Image (cartoon, rainbow, N blue to C red; front, side, top):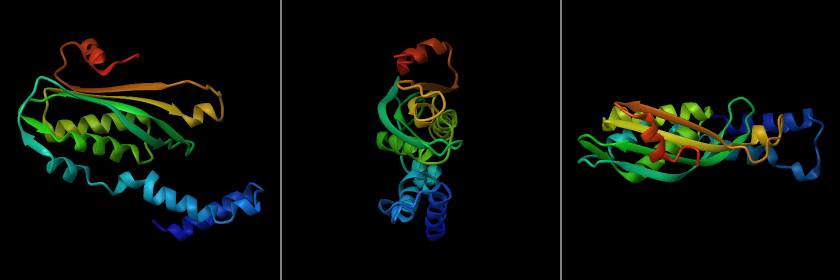
Length: 181
């Protein structure tokens, strides 16, 4: 990433919008730093390596990790979406460190990605590395692009669920994930 060019582009963007107030001095650099170090940090995470070092032999009937914080940026409007995720899986022969589950969600969220894509990526990565009987990811976000512009739908939450594997009864998985709550 060329942070200097990004900072200059932000400064040019603000000028193009007719904004050059004194309090905006340095905004380009601060914005470039936020994008490079935080908002797009997921691109620097090698998800395969993260999970490969966190998988261990073992089993359980069910593993559910709830209330994982999610902060992402809408690729259509470059506005933030904030909320939480729940990841559930039924281990077959392998478990994964719970911290790795949180890091996995964060790695996919801190990219320019649609909410649906984040959940599908989490499920696919767990399927690849842990080979559970089934796995699922529920994400509930409040989208600034819905709140601050357009529809101005204050209080709206968007809920998506990605499920993979041999699920006999998807409704029971929805119960585990807390869908609709």
